[in-house]
Image (cartoon, rainbow, N blue to C red; front, top):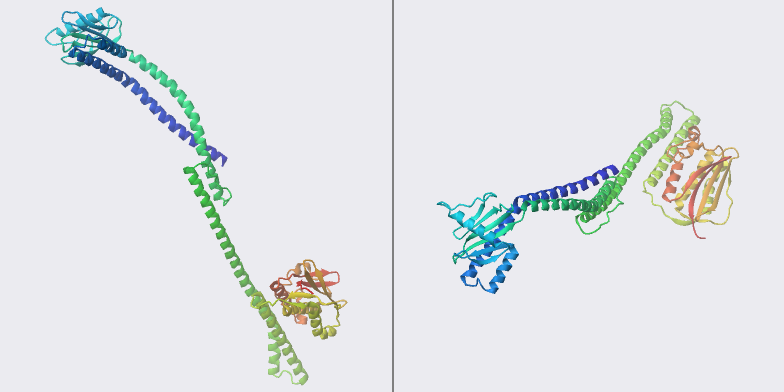
Amino acid sequence: MKCKDRKYRKSIKHMYSLIFIAVFALAMFMLFAANNLLLKRFYLKNKQTEIISAYESINAAEAVNAFDTDEYDDEIVHICEKYSLDLLVMDNDSQMVKFTGKDADMLKMRLWDKIFATQFGDKPKPPTPPGGEDETLIANENYTLSLTRDPRSGGEYLEMWGSLNSGNLFLIRSAVESIDNSVAITNRFLGYVSIAVIIISAIIIMIVSNGISRPILKLAEISEKMTNLDFDAKYVPKGDNEITLLGNNINKMSESLQKNISELKSANAMLKKDIEEKTEIDEMRREFLSNVSHELKTPIALIQGYAEGLSEGVIDDPENMAYYCNVISDEANKMNEMVRKLLTLNQLEFGADTVNMERFDIVELIQGVLKTTEILTKQNNIKVNFPIGNPIYVWGDEYLTEEIITNYLSNAMNHCDYDKTIDIDVKDEPDNKVKITVFNTGDPIPEESIKHIWEKFYKVDKARTREYGGSGVGLSIVAAICKSMNSAYGAENYDNGVGFYFTLDKGAP
């Protein structure tokens, strides 16, 4: 990106520099051309105007007989000095009436040359002095104005001769400086000035272009970050111009894009979550149907087989008939229990069952469950240790908590081995929590199975589960209840058995 920025920066500078140089070069060319082609004409035209003005002033003075006054004498001297004019006025007797200049005889000779030259032949024609032909600029009945070259000095002069209204003859002469030399000097001066102006202007244009290109490059950098969805960079306005307006609009666009993209991401996250939940629900539905079909297949097959045996009269003695009936009843009870647990789990997972949080004594609740299951523990020769102590109050749904204890205790009885001992422990935990643990002696759960035991229909030992009539749903119900009450739960392996636990918020005494 740096190379690109450098390229763009140079292009902006070059563009401004080339435009400036082109415009300045065109201006200089036009100035040089005007100087060469028009300066001399302008100079001669200006001189002609000055000479004609002097002629009119002299003619007007003679008309009012003010020619010999001191006031007019001072005025005519002032005019001739101002415009660098030589003046000669003669009467018909060739007597000099008025003269300003340096060489009166030379002016007199030039005047007579002009007069005699105009009288030569039928038509007036300009004289042809040794220096070359005159260039007549203005010719009328009163005077003739021409551009001539002096044969002695070689200089150019503007000369006007003719007669005044009084009849006196006059000659007005003005030296024409070397216009060509002046033009060359002017062009040389303009060349030096142009070089200096170009150098100074190039430095100025570099500074100006840097000032213009820097905020543009900053805007380009911000826009590039925006393409990468980085909206932290903002343009800091400097001054009040079009670039500042553009920068402010880019800042607004950045904020708008950031807001819209944030909303799109949120909507996309929600949509993704909805899709995942739908996929998960579909997967759970397929898994549920598969597991239910699998779990119900065996008891249905047994019920069907034994029922057909009874209906077909395979057996006729009362003892075997009673056995067939007991099997059918037992399998029907197992199916009924599994359906009941599945309905309970479905209500918990989909939020159909409302959690009723209340304060109760967990010790008293555990004692009640132990009394209910006392017959089963005695039948299985299991020793249950639960030291009776002071009441411990907790917050939770009492009915659902009893369901947890019942499932943990039932699971412990089904897997109790070796010492045939179940230990129930209630103790305080940090953060004002109470931890309830149900431990049973026996084989530990394989480590790779611990995270799966909370899944529906998952069975570590399928043969043993089938033996005691388990459905693989009890621990799933525990997990769903704990999630509904925001309680922690889990299982821990010990050297001599397994402990299942859950936590509740501690209530005030």
